[in-house]
Amino acid sequence: MSKPPLIQLRKAAPNSLVVNDLVEYFKRERYPRTDAAIGAFERGFVRAPDQQFFEVYAAAIGAPVTAVKRAHRATLRWRQRQDPERSRVA
Image 1: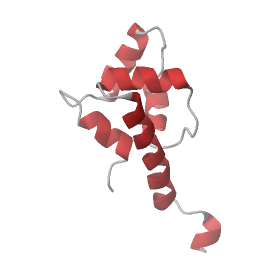
Image 2: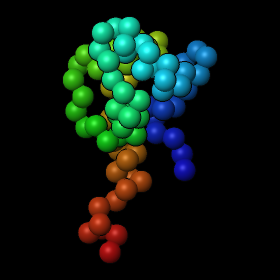
Image 3: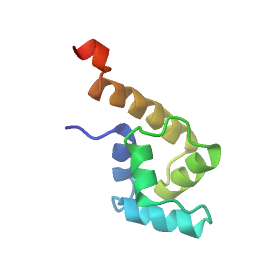
Image 4: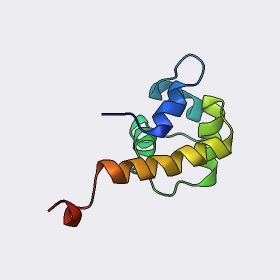
């Protein structure tokens, strides 16, 4: 199974950050999020996060906010292709 675009963007960051690195960064920025919340965002389960989440995530991985938003939209499309609606499968 391929990785979602957001995970690919995170892995392209210097030192190949892991989710726990992001959790620590979010805590330092006084915007605490769990590893489950960040993982859900990266896998496309969160459709509309708030602007601050995008900003902190982008700062954590060292990417522009626009790149993170673009990767998020691509992740949502990726998720749709991976998980087609049941009506289309049957």
